[in-house]
Length: 422
Ligand SMILES: C[S@@+](CC[C@H](N)C(=O)[O-])C[C@H]1O[C@@H](n2cnc3c(N)ncnc32)[C@H](O)[C@@H]1O
Image 1 (spheres, helix red, strand yellow):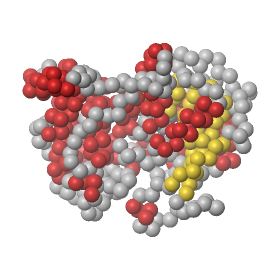
Image 2 (cartoon, rainbow, N blue to C red):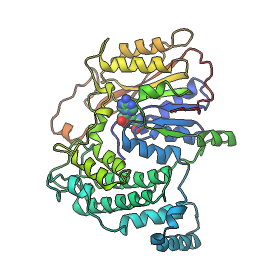
Image 3 (cartoon, helix red, strand yellow):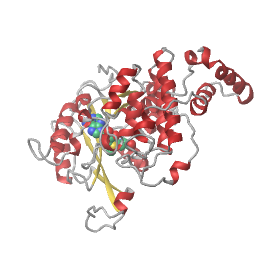
């Protein structure tokens, strides 16, 4: 899924920062995981990753790509009477192509994409022009295939044929396929009036980008450690008080845009894949509202998007301070990614990270701030004339991301972070 603010481009900078501070692989806690780009990279390098995000779609992606080590065998699903032809196809594929690990998922995804019984449902009614609201997120033919895949996944889940991880892998593939044909420019905050070129793409379900544990590491110990990676769906501030690890990576939203309102459609797909009771599914659908078919998201309204309110400077500042206080003594060091145009300024961040390092840690506001320049993300709406401020001395398309490091006071028992009693 294309996610606003994903850190794919600055992964090498994060790696270099940790290497320069002599940080050896251990447990990395990624509390605002989004697309899981950071968690995937560090799992491959032999870190155990605890990945967290409160968005349902991000959580499903994290289970599939950070928690799972590879494609699931889907044995109980393929044992279903209705799936016998697919099971036979798996056997043929293994005979012809080999790769017995990948074949079950590949065949099930092909079946879900093309052959799951057509079933117009919530996606067709709410997010295609066939529905009363006339929303144009998906062409009707794609919406029907999304509905068909989700209905089949729900049925298999209700029959006990999919465990939590298998279920997440199939749903993540549907979310990703839907994202490739969605009629949007960047986020789901709005759909486009005319059908965008994306919507002509062929409908296809692909396996998620699994991360083999320690794929880029040499030792068996690193592979074992990375294999203990887990995905959570909690409020970041609460979880910070429960987990332990060597590095806490923080990449919160930096402006007023609530992710829940900009990624509601993938989250609806994730949530409705779990609603096995038709009455609950109907009640869920009845609560969708507004021009874009939002789901109620009060529980996911992020304090990190609030530039006002709060006890000190802003709700965002207070949330940051509370999170760092909760993590003090539980994590060895913090790495923060933050955009220079964000709600918090450089001085505020420096103050927060110096407080984190008090009583024996290390933080130097000059040495520990790194600037990484990159081109600004702009949705079509921005191109259409919405204004944003350009920082003095920079070109219109240039913006910097800060990478900030702070070493905490000595933690008493960092290792053993797997005791994630959450
Ligand atoms: C800037 S994005 C993270 C991008 C991510 N590092 C990547 O590479 O894709 C911020 C994420 O934080 C999540 N988020 C915001 N507030 C949160 C909170 N209080 N608890 C958990 N997740 C939160 C959002 O859902 C969003 O996915």
